Image (cartoon, rainbow, N blue to C red; front, side, top):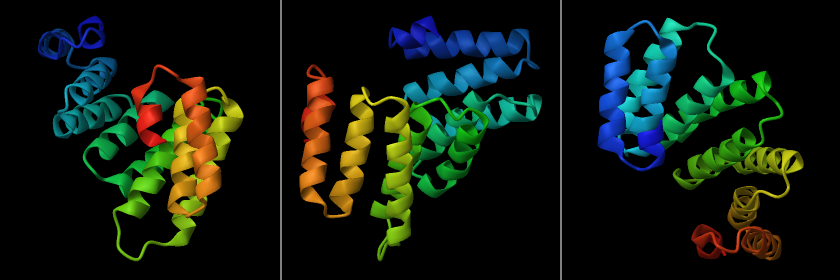
Length: 179
């Protein structure tokens, strides 16, 4: 984990592989390796790791579900990301990043299809609002909500949310890019 946080992904992967060899029945080792592989841009490999973690620990914690949703997102499988994220929310309703990430997946699912269903954006709106109700100080949350408004063609609220994201994260380039 330390190597991954330092963006030394090759070394992080080697250490993760070593942990798995030392204890191949430790579900958390697979889950951590999935996180590292996602961070290294290798989500297809990460998917195998998180699925193995869930097989080894059928009582997996909500974090495994978030990791599965994240991995599906990184592989472009937005619709598949939604179910584990919703289950993660049901198991841990106070973890603000999960509904915000759920909103992003709804938006990406909607944006990637032709003739998209407006209900998908309504679900994205509800998820973003839920996430912000848990943590209104999160710039990512305001960017998520702004994205929903943008796709709904509600331009003034979209701009207002993106401006709020910039105000909350003035050193975050993604806030400015979203605006």
